[in-house]
Length: 113
Length: 115
Image (cartoon, rainbow over all chains, first blue to last red; front, side, top):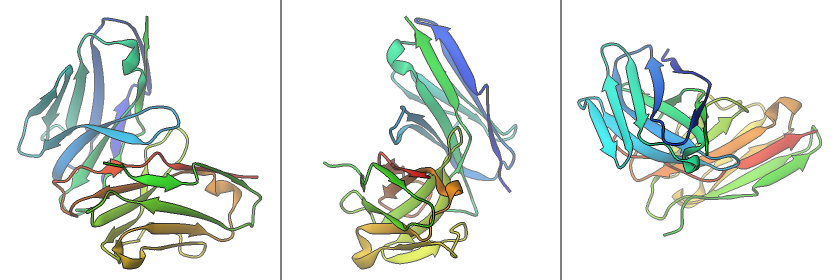
């Protein structure tokens, strides 16, 4: 069974610092990996999707890398801002479960002014 | 374009009472998902629909939970009777296809508190 782990569970950084969020998964037979953002009391917003054949994806200040062989993905957020404060979750879709995303528990990020 | 709409946003009930949640997916999205999210955890899939057919309900506790998606559009998730452990956020999501390439769009969720 696929297991997804996110460490650390919580992170606090001063504004302007770069954020590095980690995601690891146990089964490398994945179709893709997604990073989501969740604000308190809100649903999830998709940030980046990396297909299994890709090594990274970029969107503005966000960059996500994928290393399938080691079962790891990293989300980088450059020059963090207080508005980046949220919980960030990664989710993998394995090749045998087309409709099912397996989520990590998330990393709660606080960016202090 | 309206996103995924869920109601109610919040619901407080006594244990053993029934409760129902409603979801209206993005227009044209034929795949609909119900996820359960406990505090401090990631969402877990309860059921997935392709149009009106439930294609994955292996995680749905069928003794008390039921779901339907009549006409392949809106969906309702019901719990009867509710238990204390059902307190959680129930998230609905939709995508344009069931294949892995498509991004899921989530609703804001329905937060259930069972007293």
